[in-house]
Length: 107
Image (tube, rainbow, N blue to C red; front, side, top):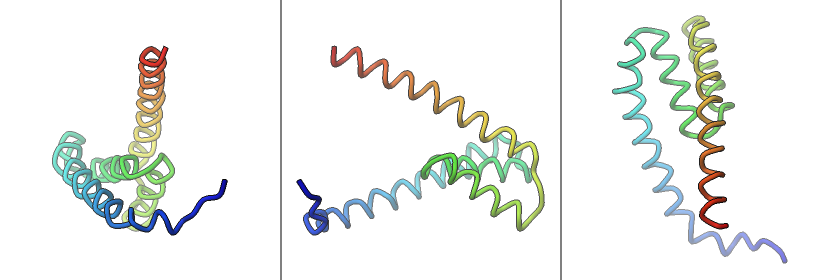
């Protein structure tokens, strides 16, 4: 069995639309509720950037996004403490919940 990439070419446009929609949705959520709840200051901006990175991929995206912002505008130790810990906490519990639900559904 081999992967025939040319058969996936028809999915390029739908995937691009979904990715763009996700980017818009997460950007709006990151700017309005997250930034405002986190205090409307520099730490809030870095935390909001980390949230955007998490929602667009993984913890590595969050850390890279925050690092690029911090490299340009200055340090934010609170954001680098809060985002990875809270993100890992939610990922662990959400993953455990999803696995448990699906195991119970497909018993």
